[in-house]
Every structure is written in C-alpha cells, then in structure tokens.
Image (cartoon, rainbow, N blue to C red; front, side, top):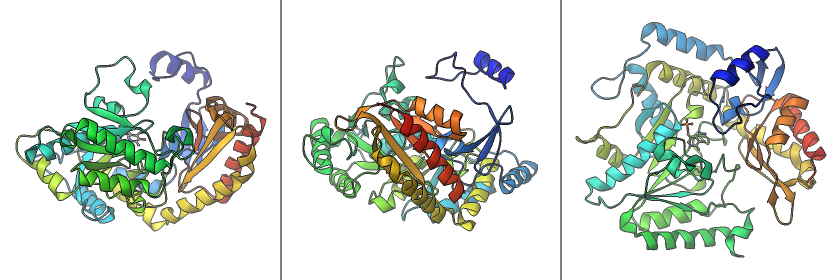
Length: 435
Ligand code: PMP
C-alpha cells in the first residue's frame, strides 16, 4: 500500500485535506459490507463507500452483469435532446412509479450537484414562464449540503464551500436549520415556532415576489443526521405555498432506502415540487442522478429557448445499473432492512448515551449521527475526525466524521453481527475519549 499511498500523495488532489496526510487507507476490493485495502487488511464498511450509498453492498454480480450486458448492447447514446435510449425510458418510468404522486417527470444528471443546479434553474424558469421573472432568490439553510458546483455550492450552508472562490451566486439566503438539540439557537422558544417566524421574516424582507424556491434535505445528512421536528416541513410547506414559493427536496442521501423508504420527503409532510436524487439510485455502481419534476415545471423546462443538459443525460449503462439496483432493493426488502439496521445500531448505542463526550444520538432509517461535545451543558463541540480515525485503525470499522458528528450509514445489507461490531468499536473509542 505504501507505493500506492505515495503516488496518491503525489498525484491525487484531495480537497480540504492536508496534502501530507499519511493515514489514508487505499481501498481496492469490496464484498457486502467488507472492504479490503491494498495490503489485504479487511475493514467493515459502516459508511456505504464512505459516502452514504452502496445500498445493495459491494461486489454484487447482478450489477456487474447488468453493466456488462449493456456495454455489449449499447454503451452510450444520449437521450438528452433529439434522441432517446431504451434504458433511460425504462428507468424514468420506474422512477415515476416510485416517486410521490405528481412527480413523474424525470431529468437525468451525473450526480447530486448537477441535479441541484438543474432544480434551481428550473424553479427560476418556471416563474419566468409565468411572467414572474423577478423570482430569483433561493432560500437554503445553514449546515445543509447541496453540492460543489457554483449553484449547489452557493446553496450549501458550510462556509468552507464558498471560501475564497467567490463571487458566488447572488440571491441565496440561509435560514437556521431545524436542529432541536441546539435549543440555544431558538431563543428559548420551540424550534419550529422560531423557524417559521424566521422564514416569514425572510420572505417579508426579501419580498415573496422575488423568491423562486426553498431547498432542503428532508433530514439534513452532512449537517449531522438531523431529523426535523414532525411539524417543521408541513408548516414550512404551507407558508411557502401561500407565498407562491416552490419547494425542492434534496434527497441525494435520503432516498432509495437510506432512511427506510424509497423517498423520505412524503413521510415528513414535505410535499415538494421537485426532488433531486443520486447516490443510492445506482448504489454508487455508476455516477447517475435524477431530478423529478411535476408536470408544470417539466413543461417550463421543455419549452423552446432553454438550453440545459449534460452529455451523460440518461447514460444507458448507468441506467441499466440503476434498474438492476432498484430490483435488488425491492426483491431483497432493503427498505425494511434499513429500518432494522437502524434499530440494531440505535439500541446498541444506548449505553453510549451517558458517555461524557456524547451530546446527542440521532437516527433516520439505517443512518446514525453521534454528536460529540466537550461539555454536555454548553454543547461545546469536539471534532469527530480523530475518533473516526481511531475507530478504523483500532477496530477496522469505517465510519465518517462530519464536523463534530460521527456518522454511520452502512450498506443496507449489514447484518446483526456487523451492526454489533460497529457499535462495539464506536463505544470502545468514545469511552476512552475525554473532553
Ligand atoms: N445533496 C446532498 C444532500 C449530498 O449529500 C450531496 C453529496 N454528498 C450532494 C447533494 C451532491 O451530490 P454529488 O456529490 O453527487 O454532486
């Protein structure tokens, strides 16, 4: 591995990482929830390829075969404008059947960021077609992650994303996220009451007639696995609708079983006008994303005069892999399994709740966030990076760190023993971690 790691340091760009980092594992093979590095050391992947995906597990022959068959039949033909291909039509039809009612029009991308850019443009275009061209503002939230392109990156609520690469897109306003654990943000009031007043004040200040859409993850993922209070999305939705503002659900992480359902937004009363998705659509076996539009928005986008789309729109091999992936999720009952995995992990972590460094444990389906604090009263954060590295090095379990939250987001084929091993590794390291 040393030789590969050396080449990695010399030639591969890892943004927001120290270039002389020496503890990077070079992963070369995977099967189920197990992955191996270049020296043959085995790890338990409790993060879905270190990025919240890999729903069906690593090394699935069914997906390799679907890819090989499509590569032999027709590797590539765009379905962007004049032409179409059979696999993109079949996948769009399948997605329309799984999507919340009314969101049956599909636009393909290569991933989440392109999808978010597409949704932002589509929202503005929708209003423009209706004679409301001033509606250009986008409402987003601090700690919401939406991607790394200029549009999606500007909507992302992490300062580092915009650091020194400006000027960013104008007309994005960041709201406070629904984060009940951080009650200090809400001035002694209920989380949703405070946030609804804040949203109403923002609409008043910017002017409803200037706002195109709000974007949000049903459950913030990279922000720390943060399920909102039950009344948050229904009340936000009502206020937006009253003001003619569209709602974009960023389901890049939450869809395809990650939180226990095909899509997370319906269960949270979000009722969005568009859904952006990617990651679990192919379980990571191919780069592919999709934006689901309602008919009115799709009509605005397809009118003459708007030019937007990507070379790999509806890539047939990626779409063939996605179709086979959705079959596996369905046939193997991975939506139910996701909830079961979450229950194993959450129950196993009960003992960790009382550790001095554990501020809060949150979950959504198979996804868990453990927020680390130096002081449970002040909620002063402890960065989770060293703990995540220790969990990998000492116990061979791969988890991720997002700020001061350790995240578990395993493939949805994790078994009870693997869940127990993940819990043991986490608990052992967090027990030895001192504020
Ligand atoms: N939205 C969310 C919620 C995400 O987590 C991500 C990626 N982590 C994106 C959008 C961007 O997706 P991509 O990296 O595929 O462009």
